[in-house]
Amino acid sequence: MHRLNQLQQAENEEFDICIIGGGATGAGCLLDAQSRGLKAILVEKHDFASETSSKSTKLIHGGVRYLEQAVKQADLNQYHMVKKALRERLTLIHNAPHLAHPLALLTPCMSWFEGVYYTAGLKMYDALSGELSLGKSEWLNKEEALKRNPALTHNIHSAVLYYDGQLNDARYNYSLVKTAIRYGAVALNHTEAMTFEKDRAGQLTVLHVRDRLTGRLLRVRARLFINATGPFADRIRLMANPETPRRMRVSKGVHIIISADNMQSDAAILVPKTDDGRVVFIIPYNGKLMIGTTETETDLTDSEPVVERAEVDYLIDYVNRYFNKPVSREQVIAGFAGLRPLLQANPNADSKELVRDHEVEVDKTTGLVSILGGKWTTYRLMAKDTIDTCCELLNLDQKPCLTEHIKLVGAEGYAEDFWKILVHKYGISEPVARHLNRQYGSESLEIAQLMHTRPEWKETLSSQTQHTKAEVVFVVRAEMAQTLKDVLARRFGLELTDWDTTYQITDTVADLMAAELDWTTEQRQQAVQDYHAEIEWFRKSAALNARSLAAS
Image: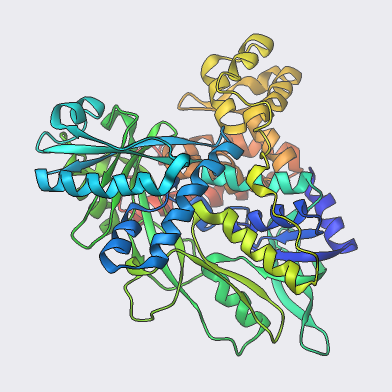
């Protein structure tokens, strides 16, 4: 799958639908539309999943906190949102079992009353899941809880065990894009929506797009345009119609990463309440321990949000309230910050209280369709509602949505022990084979073939990671990765979980990418220099020591 071919199709064809935004919602819309027989194209300013969709807590969930609010406030909207999301969890797992799976979580209880309270709430959570439950909740006594997760403080009274789902968000996002392309869709990363053309009636007809890598300008012609830009939705709405009122508010969420040695358990922890009314998760993820999230209302800017010192201290404080052995800020090895799109209903509401449901808005003046709000777990329903609306606007017979049962790339033929084929047929080490199976599913055979062709590509990029040289080549050739950040932040996810290792392997990754993308010596050197500077900025913003970076 070559980006140049996608660019040529974008310029030479006319589309039923053009989607602006390459996060989970935009990618979901692309697959939904194309699988229904509509000709669809997606344009993304940066890279697929470059914003909110790769900065999540990596959970597929209905939202325990939202259920609590629904009950306390007698809010049917929040209740129905939780119910829909709980039913979607299993769909996400079934459609890409290599990228999503059930996750056990423990909610610590500091008293008998808390045990009763949380058990009742999580039993309601079970009931809403119905036959699609991932596992029944259970109230564990202190001994049982500590056996399940020995990292917990011994000050607990008990804990409630329940189940939600976990996903590799960035790779799931890209798998949606790749699956849509296999259905015949067109998708472009690093292409910025600049301006619209309109007909005499004021309806949108053409989107002017700039390729940010080459400066090339394109005219994308479509019958309808979908705005799926999440936190940036108001920008596209105002580009289409300067008279439209703003609808979005934005909050910043931060996660930090520490070594998995701090919690030897497969059961995550849900800290059920904080002093300011949030919840905090402590979750095993990709061999590390992820802690988050914060929630702070913020202004929208073009700069990538970063982790700040106060946010690190805030999260460490809550970890230490529930861990038996305290964690220090010196143990933080990485972190990431993302922006959440909050649909404004009550302008005076605190951002923590805004509902994560969605709305499909149609601007009658221009015909722009905007999908606003929402969250990862309900991306498929958001896409379905959006494409249903588009079919009505295009006066098409309502074709049924198929995405509930569409397996994503890598899922066909996948099995948990698929890695054994890579070991026995291609001589790949077991740790690397298991890693490839989790990241790529049955597509790992394509990477194994690259290793067979070039045995030196079997080498891992570092002793600290199972990612291999062959994977760099694969994601450039087959997944449109164009920059170091495309590879290391999104395709591999390393930037989010291990700053030291990411910094140290940048040169090796750059060598492989330069050979594939015909970079000059100067382009390669500049790419490495810029990326190293970015990682150093992340560490400086979080007020963390440079550790091995300076020596690398």
